[in-house]
Length: 596
Image (cartoon, rainbow, N blue to C red):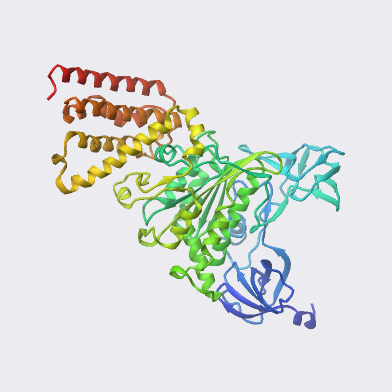
């Protein structure tokens, strides 16, 4: 390139952290990707004013100075979508971290680049098209076994439909080799294993469906009291040390989603390191295979460039939509959206935007809405049923749930799992406060729950009423002492304790307690509520509460969550019969004058 050509290039005029002002960008497009400086740092146009463009750079801009040349690409920031995504670890702009480590060692150097997918790897392809066949967008052109747990559909890209001119036969191909040629009204289109899709644009679907099935997590307080539907969105706020990350890890391991996408968005490096070390070693509880065979990790820690943190959740949700289009139920875990919002705040300050509440940009609510609305249950372009469920952790400073990120997140999610510091300090896991949490999916998922456990909704509502009254009497007992309460009120304190220890808390290190099937949850809750109903009737008949609490079945109820395997419903039925028998025996003694 000669000096005259270099002089025509756009050049940096101002650098403010990750925000760079570039002159000579009159023809640039909004959200166009550019390469900044000699190292070709990845950036994106976020504002234009005549010949000047504002670019947010996704890499460290240290030592970048005015006069540096900027190269336009003419394309938006897009992801590579194809076989090889599962099991990989990416940063916020889809750079594969294992490949970068092999290239440069432990530290990512500025300007380091690696293809998101291995262009040389060959995949065994099973074709599903034949010449002369009519095809439409979203239809499967063939199948690839990406991992032993994931069958990857090679789909006709959105916007492509027509007649198959030629189709490849079975064999091994790379992601860039042509698998089919389609005659379309506008010309010929080639189908390969690789698609590229802009991260900020939602992938299309045929229609959005009503959420009807619960995302089964095996966590009793969630599944029974505050269920999340497949395709729903949940918020899990909590102060420091309340277990947001640990709860999300459990949900990622045990939920019945087909694909897991975990986004570490601005979390501390040591926490993300634990995730990156633990996930590859975890076993899928349903298949015994490594959990990474159906998981994608996105790591963007707090010491990484702030602009890349902002884009990371869009990277995660785009990957989720891609697998949703294959007919999978995908679960996205974002940890945490508070750090993402802080990145928005820093970027807005450097762009000199007018701040709103607590310095966050006025666009915060709409940005949160844009993220959460990309979840949902859909009928895909290919006619399959898929879903994207989103669980976003929120880290309010000082545990203040009135701060903007928590409040705006509540507007766009229908499940609120409120983590409680007191419960966490008491080693109660999960530390979800059952009085401040809620779920708006109870009616939608009720049909699936009733098929698994008839009578679930009535049992759940009765238990919630008991726990609400238990808290009411607990507050009174703190003032006057529990001995001042009559037995009819102290019964709620007793049953509440049984509920806390025997049902609501779970031990993630106990194999029989880490995951609890829906049927076992209903049976276990049924035993506890039978004890409550029988005790209530006995106390009305004159039985002392002390006689009820001394029943031999009470310790067994507390141990039932670990003593009975998930499929041992007959054992729980025998326990229910024993509880009924001991209550009947106590009733007879009361009637005979033996109980005081």
